Figure 1 (spheres, rainbow, N blue to C red):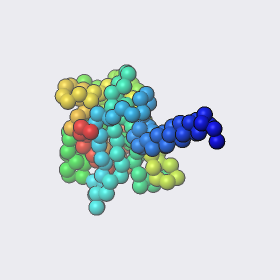
Figure 2: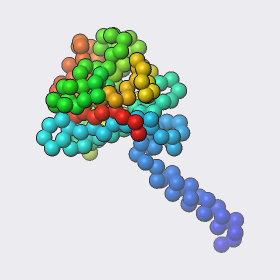
Figure 3: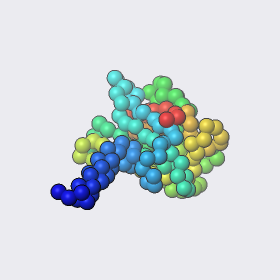
Figure 4: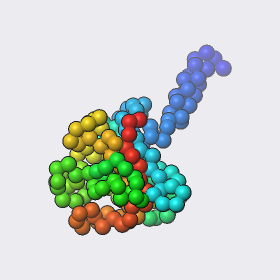
Length: 185
């Protein structure tokens, strides 16, 4: 093998190894795949053994905050809802998290409606393996340490059903089945 072919093979192999070793969160990001999330949340069931059901990450991007991650061990084909809630507590089966994060006191709506709750997020549907992913840019929140729109130290809540994006005050999404505190990465 000549020197040029060997160099090319080594460069190609190195590129393959480097791209194949990205973390799950790196694979879901848009833009720079090596940038770190500013905030993260490990989400656990609120009942029983309180097993981990997923992780969600947040990072600033052009136009908002990218919310990305996955939930696991869901019923295949089941649609659940994920919201950011106003208090950073998972006590009392997630009820201590309060209502949806809503710093401007707006009505509940779909996540893309700028006149809805800041904590509204898209519904998630589990695949055949019981995994649901989220990769969404929320234009109504901030990852700053503090401030009116900051979600640092608030909570994610997973509800047992789909959000209908209409019913007030919270979309008729069902029971709170999992919760995670949003904190610095």
